[in-house]
Length: 280
Image 1 (cartoon, rainbow, N blue to C red):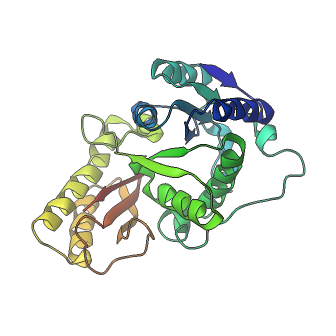
Image 2 (cartoon, rainbow, N blue to C red):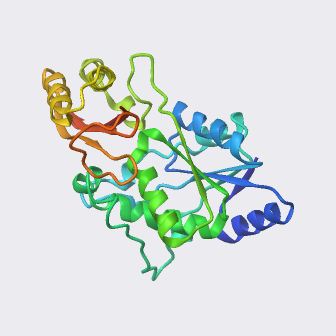
Image 3 (cartoon, rainbow, N blue to C red):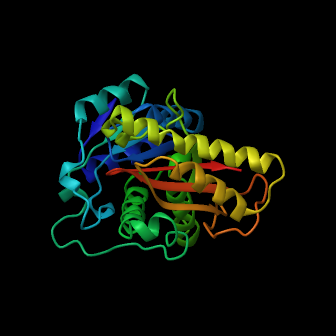
């Protein structure tokens, strides 16, 4: 597995692969990898000859009240996971390599990024769009592989790709869940036993919503009301948003469109922010 730390080295390797007729898949991550990332590498392996994982804690994704310095960086464990799963290269640049002194160019997507997490974390998708465009220009991947857990990020990525005419296809891997239904997430490890008991209500609420939809309920208001009721039975859970949206545009829906509606949830469990979603 190649360990690449500079933009120049990454560009050179990508150029070599293209010259050899190899297709490439890029998995952009902030590191601190878990079972969900293993699934992304497996998905990427089905799409391309070369799998590239970026490990980069992107400071642009963090708002003024979010401590980027506190974000875990278990580099050796992340490298070991990537090697175990058969990644061909890991790109782990320093912040100064991606955003050198005097850097002042940013990318904003101003529709898909606005609702949901765009309201509660307004810096997030500007940072995502900027770093994705830079990675596209460095790596020139054929595929971008993301997880359904980050459904809005995937939608923003698709819009950026379409609007700016990048020749990149997007693959979205299903959510990987732990035994109790909680979606794999870095922040899960911060939960105490009692907090986790409240947090798993998120998955129960999502399953309930899908069952309602599968049984013919089309009123998004009715489904959101039931999901809200389930979550509010748990005292540590504070709702940030519960919304049923178009999975492409992220526009809020008045009625469920079977197979083309996304129920997205974000909550605080005490001081731990969790997101999850399900297609209904």
